[in-house]
Length: 406
Image (tube, rainbow, N blue to C red; front, side, top):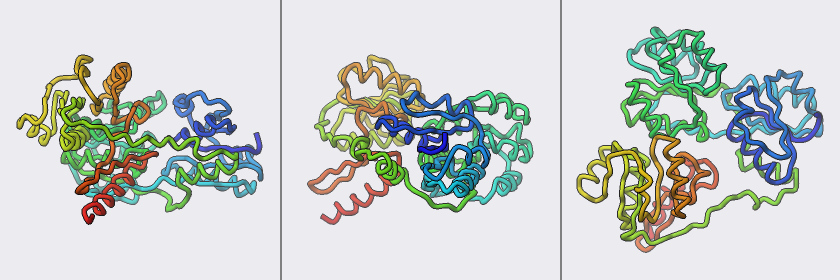
């Protein structure tokens, strides 16, 4: 299997790169460490999946000086990155590290190592939501009373669950779910488990770091962030795609997926928002500025949404969604903390040809809800082509500043 393009990493970026190449008729191999990693990969024409953990020698046996190697492993998979980089140096292969930008910011506490976090937690009391993955589970058994205090969120695979149980974590305190998670979903877990401390890694936007931190802060929990093991540089996702475009002579515009900026009149039109969390709150506030008749369907509301509902600016149905809620809707927004419910709402809206935006799944959106900026006679809408939501927010802020001077 020497030569060719080899992608290391079952990360979201690794999958996206493989899917991109497959759609453009290019062949490649993607290497993932586990059966779970290969199981979440869709079938892709031209893409070979190599499953299993690889040391430096095994990686070196797969490549030669003609190989183009994309290291899209997780930012915290330092050992794997070291193995891939060393093997590429040995074989003089072309090595490109995909760098996932750090996003952690705001009211949080940063720590250099897991042990630093553990030391801090041992000086506290209260429940802990551990979102650092199964590999760190053994480290956090050093937290006093870990079996009672820690609620561990791990991937839904047998190996991770077995490992957690063998280490002494209580079955009732293990949450097996596939992320990344919306801010609403994180908030629901924090509230239901009475979490005082949320422990996370800075896994960047694809890892849902901002959503975790925002949920913790808005629900009175402390966000404890473990720093990355390597201070490394590399290439952004778009730069990796440009490298592959040149290698395979792919026309770049074939995978841009730009959305047409559709501006429609919502004045007096019915906009149905499913969900009552912070995302729904932002959407509702924006829709009201455009004169929409907003209907919110959610058992619970944020305090701000509750005030809006009480003032009768919107219609509030205090229950879970019903298919009948879509009747007469001009647009639909699915922003509940239930993935299955959001999926069903998207399906129903699509069947009725109603434009729908789904907060936790870009692929199910028929339109992206934009960041909106107002000038005296100008309205600007901004959406992200990729998954760098922080960049969208920052750019929208700059546009607002610009419009304020016009």
